[in-house]
Image (cartoon, rainbow, N blue to C red; front, side, top):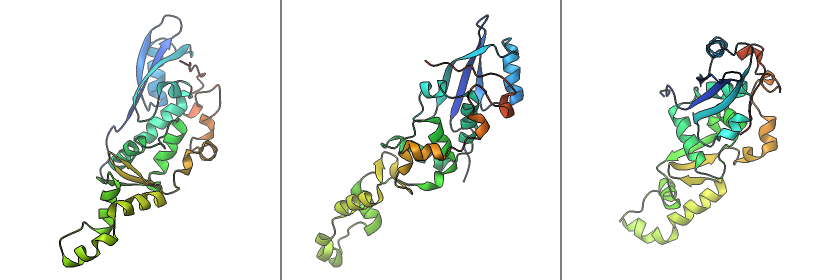
Length: 218
């Protein structure tokens, strides 16, 4: 299975609070590169704010990024780079369901738990799912004789109900835990983010030294 080099992207706009000099930083960024960018805009002492984000991450909105500590966003960016092409396709399918991931925490968890989701590409409706499991009807005598006993569409509908599967433009997708991770309580208990990145008022020493957090809401 081949990895995608840059499957998804996140960039942050850092601005010097004094003279408004700004620079875009592509994430994930090492401590060394982050420090170099701050030096470029004269914000070595931490006198910077985050004024904007650009990203291509399905289900993630800018306001969610703006209220998340930068170190955690950086961690998400690093985790997204571990995804394979099949994982990206699953994420696209999940985006077309009612169970899409709308927080940084859920997206980080997904990068560790892609195995919990099964996607059948090309299976976009109940009849196609029924045909997949029962085989397409043919003109044989046996098929004609027993065809009326098996409604492939109804079979597909029932199977999807039992599996809590969802039909999307990308295919039929199921969740091993039946989408229970949609519950915020369960998700919060499973945060895979290192504990030091969850501390308010810090950007995380292992990533950025001792810079203060200056995230703004929009």
